[in-house]
Image (cartoon, rainbow, N blue to C red; front, side, top):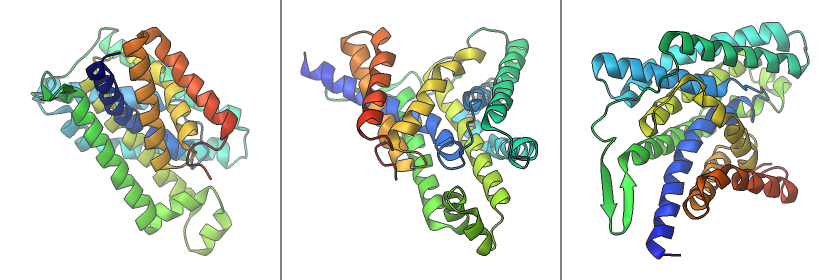
Length: 289
């Protein structure tokens, strides 16, 4: 095993893990904190990819900048979807499986709509850094991976500060634990949940811009991430953003190492094997309470 190949595999895994963190952070909020099994999360990621693609192809704007501009739209979309979910399921005390069917329907409708509008051809974006790489000694840093990774770390740091340093953020962390105590502090739990879910959808749209920078996309590619996002969320510990980052990095490094030395077909099996070992020896996840 050559040292330079090993070092590049670990580096690629760290960059991949940064992207996985961006993909998963929305699930860490909706599933880990709010206990909402949003199986449609990857659909919003792909929708964010196509928004970045359309703006990039029409106006030449950087896909990440286009996604940041579109964040308020996705935030509003997330707030509207939670309101429908609340009125249809939470308020009536419906069983979680019906809510799961609701999100599965959103996943299916979004995918079919994108297929009808764009077809099944792969779409990609143009940006000056996508084809470039930095070379630090024997380590290669492709900018199409490095830029999304750095932006992902920035997003996670901003969210962590928001959740721990602001009243609304602390209310989001508390809403799943004790809604009565939250009401006593003059906070509306439903409003807090709506804000949290809207943030989770907004982060998914930004992750979509990262995805289309890393690789071309087509409408059904989001299915590849359904298992990964829930696996990373559970691996890191439900509701823990630092745990999400650590879990994403571990999964990225394991997948990169496995793909480099044993072949890409083994990567998913080894990754989920790591998840099973974590659940066997630490069911609450790495940083779970």
